[in-house]
Image 1 (cartoon, rainbow, N blue to C red):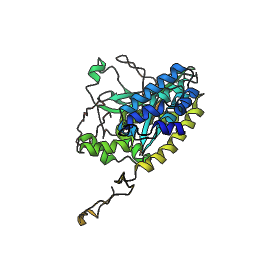
Image 2 (cartoon, one colour; image 1 turned 60 degrees about the vertical axis):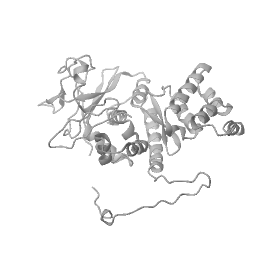
Image 3 (spheres, rainbow, N blue to C red; image 1 turned 90 degrees about the vertical axis):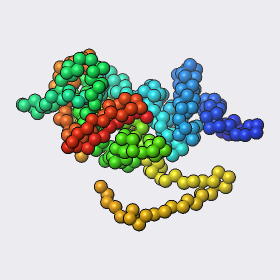
Length: 353
């Protein structure tokens, strides 16, 4: 560890910047030893090293994280055979990097058991829900309503649909509306605030406020990924889906949940202004408006379906669950927001970080 510390020491007339510190640290003997022991060959070790250097270079928050925690988080994903940026993510929380399983990683783990033929989570566009079966009350979708994907993408997303098909023919699905998913986020994520989310996607926050909010939770910075992951987890937790890999999946998700609780607790603390030369907290003047001292404090619905519905415009076979009131509709276009107005329900949207 001493050699690692020496490699991070200031050189010349000034200290190395944060990104240079990480690129030096990860190529030091200590972290390289960790990486080489956890990867199958030198080529894999070099690939992961390069990927992490690029990742940290693009994230100011990760540059503030302990280099060892970044590598440790990545090695968890690599050890599961997942790919950085697809199967898993390295996310910063209060100066420490954490492992986060992506929805594609969840699917990959399920299919690795060998008993799953197909599994995915896809969006449901406005207009694709056509009602419910009169006998079974199962929701029905028409995926041929839009001739092409390009045409479909012009319409806002009203929910997400996950399904799994096993090799023995077993089929199960889960549908959740955007509103139901956000209800879930409010219930289980301490750092998610629906009113703040509404302000974020409507552009009511300043750039600095929006950036601070995104740092608090992936529900703000990677909304689509979290939504798809939520629906897949609901599908797997339904009690009807028995997979060979289910025990491993449950173990990873349980551990991730516990770590997320700890990370959210750290992220919820207010940031203090510290004098780097003395280590003392700088005093901040705060003015309180007496009128602001009084205030008020302001379920999750899903339905499974087992029938396979018709295919349309090249998308996989799907059926779904009963849609909840369409209080949320959004179009996940990178760096853009599409909002579908609704006179009776609240209007929300989504974004990509």
